Image 1: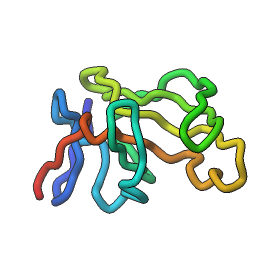
Image 2: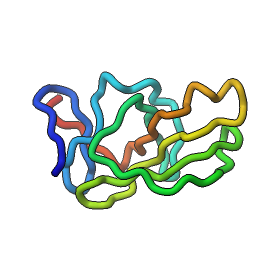
Image 3: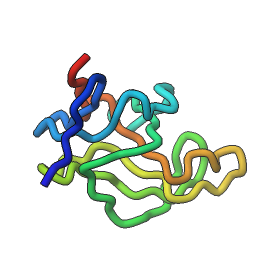
Image 4: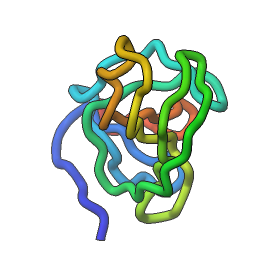
Length: 107
């Protein structure tokens, strides 16, 4: 059962509109996803975290896991599980949502 938030400035899955994060949880809007711009969030909800894998991203090697909407299974981005470079450690445990995969609700 999807969790819904009563309040302003929520991000939802582009496909089914399940709430996935809050605007207040954005750390940065300056990230690059597979399909363009992406946002880094501290928290996510109503998602399923896939298997971990190592990927070479723009900022080096990271262990990441794709995140999908728990309601409709749309791939929304990924979770940073491990960063191998010291300057990238702040990403660990954080979530990337691709801008094309989320929509604003109650703005």
